[in-house]
Length: 73
Image (cartoon, rainbow, N blue to C red; front, side, top):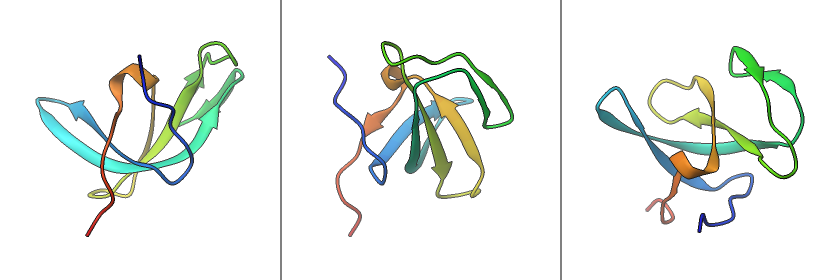
């Protein structure tokens, strides 16, 4: 089961063989444009807009691809 994610949570995800770290900016629950693409989300299958700590760019991910991280020191 995927942990519940909220705005402001620090998360990591796999990208091109590396691990990226960032912050959840929005929970998306309807079809919309975000992260440079059209996102087919719904309340039953939400997606999350995240901002990379390294690049500052945003991307959208399904909850199964995000891993909640502990608080930063």
